[in-house]
Length: 359
Image 1 (cartoon, rainbow, N blue to C red):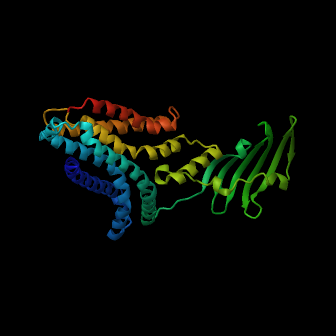
Image 2: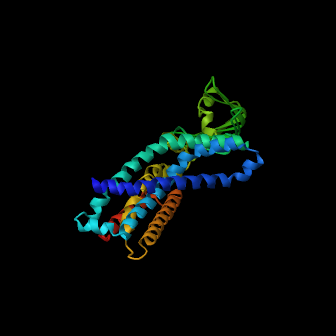
Image 3: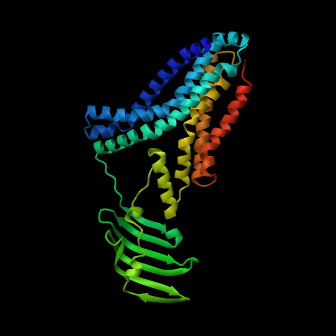
């Protein structure tokens, strides 16, 4: 218990100061990135302060792995350089036993930060983005162009040149309907179409229907209500609903991915980012393992050498994750491997380094 208190008395101040430092740095970076826009729009200081406060949870989420990395490396390096660990090892306490509390602490912190991101970071960051757009006079439009939607399990395909969300109207609409065996059934053309909330389908103006049956085609300039009733895909589907999965919670992210699957749009990249939501908090546990395995490998300039090794390993991890996420985006890797592959790779490296650490 005495060793545990001693370890955390050295570790916690370094961790908390690091969190504060990295959080302030990230807030300042975000501020200076948009500073000229704030000046142009004469944004008051009080509004900027509120904007920065809304951004703080996001900075803490980003800062946690770096702070944990620095705190563990700093704590163990100082104990190595002061020969404190030599005394501890000589008394029969192994490196694993001595650092186990840090591993357990980081494991609980990883789980906690997953929920912290889902329930605190995401809502506050959403408020920050919306408030920033309000201060800068930016607006979002749900209008969409060159829309292609696959509906009814692939039996119906909609293509529209433009979707007007305010009026819930489609322009340049083409609807291709297929039979259960995926053979062509009909093609419906319409100069425009308006959504009827009461009827629950699209009403087409200046339309024509091409019916295909037994290899023959018939043309009908009058679109029957029976045909119109098949055009029941709601207006929400045609909106410009591109969402950054990192900016929503896991529930909304999964609903967005399900929508992409349903309408036949690519979903590899958002699915890999969804898996990354679960993988990223585990980095807190991973960097502790890395720090323990790399700290003290140099007998000279222990603190500096350990920090350089730990930071280099962390940079290599993030670069690897960027590459695997990019490969998942273009379907060279599965989304699951793209998000979790680097975690398991560096976990294996960390275990190997831990087993060969100087004790």
